[in-house]
Image 1 (cartoon, one colour):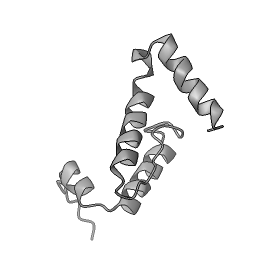
Image 2 (cartoon, rainbow, N blue to C red):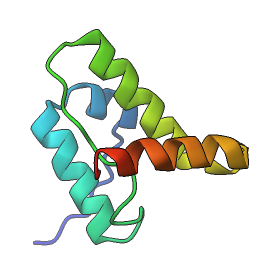
Image 3 (cartoon, helix red, strand yellow):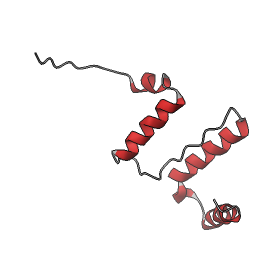
Length: 86
């Protein structure tokens, strides 16, 4: 017997109930299904260090907003990253 059932799930509630490993699985799935670029939104897990969390947040925002940066801003970031060979 086949039964079709629609289930309504609030996406925010679902994501808020996930732990970090489940969130990473979701991101991997989104990348595999090409909903987001494979190299988009790198995830760095910082263990409750507020400085790391803020830095990670800022880098993630910069990835999606590069067009807002000036040429000088981009050069400064590029030089800093190349200095440490990231």
